[in-house]
Amino acid sequence: MAPLIALASLFVACMVVGQLGFSFFADWTVCLRFALAGMFLLTASAHWGKRRAELVRMVPPVLGNAGIWVTLTGMLEIVGAVGLLVPATVHWAAIGLGLLLVALFPANVHAARSGGTLDGKPVMGVLPRGLLQVLFLACTMAVAVGA
Image 1 (cartoon, rainbow, N blue to C red):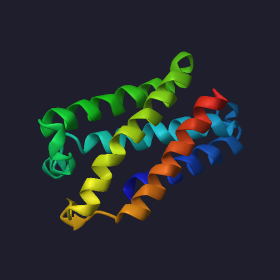
Image 2 (image 1 turned 180 degrees about the vertical axis):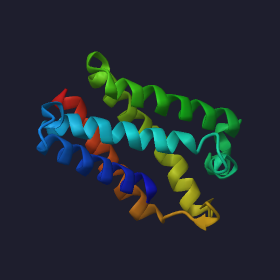
Image 3 (image 1 turned 90 degrees about the horizontal axis):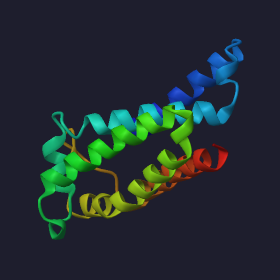
């Protein structure tokens, strides 16, 4: 839920800043880029923090070395977030992050079905988690198309 809250609050804050006269933030796609960047930086932070062990358990066993996958996906989230902030790379960063969301979906399903936790609390079920992924994917694709 924290990624959704981060995305929504950063988007609204950016739009407010745009309305206050900062013309750079007057375009909703720019605001969405910054909000997605903040959201992905937030989610990436979990890959090395206290939630790391829980993320490692989310990786489907068939993929093997879960720790490497968690590190790699965290790094990709950071690179993608930075890419969203650089005008020359926005399009490709958004596409890359969209593909990452699709690639990570099996881990989300595995976590929901196997009783995974985040912060010691059960993760969302498959349906709400899937709907959230669709929303995040729609946002990344909106940025890719609008860039």
